Length: 241
Image 1 (cartoon, rainbow, N blue to C red):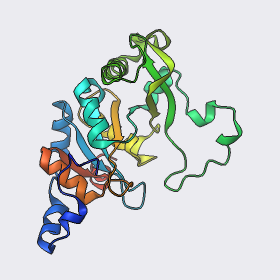
Image 2: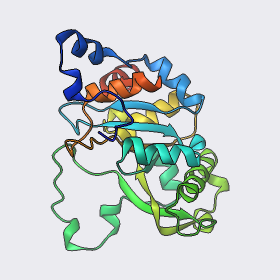
Image 3: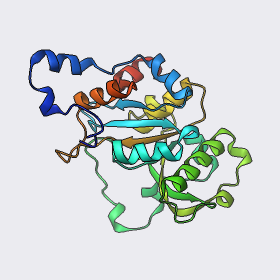
Image 4: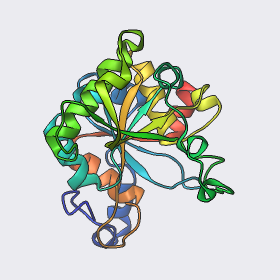
């Protein structure tokens, strides 16, 4: 599990029914707990739904993504480090959906098993970075995106960022959870409820042993071990949609 750091694995947890029952609720938190964590700069874990991607993402607000946070995202989550921006913010920066911008045959008939479309936009580096891939460089880019999202009208996006880069941008649905229920929208809805700017980092938690997404049981165990808030997407939707 990318999550050797995450503590107990699914196989280790299968020793008894009591252990499984304990792990099924370990790490669970209220939406209010998650909002307070985001405001304090802490990461939270959100599982979208078993009938969607079936993945748990480690989520930070962009303002608080230090170099150490990028290291955690790489080592403990292991998926793609992305910054989700609110739809109006992305529009202010003239950021398209990637599939609509690229004129290539491979963008046709792009059928997804979990949604109607992907949220991917462009990839960027801040112009003050070197290669853009180091933890320090990605932190610089991500924190600058958070600052830009707080005041889009004051940001000359092309002057601050270059394309392509090493931070993947996601563009939220215009109506957030009323229109789409992905991690992009779940994270942005939580940021909005926490009175934070519309810029959150999402990164899928992967399992080193299975090669698949980290199971909700193991994600809960990781959350409990690190005292992070864990939410099911339905909890966020019921509260904030």
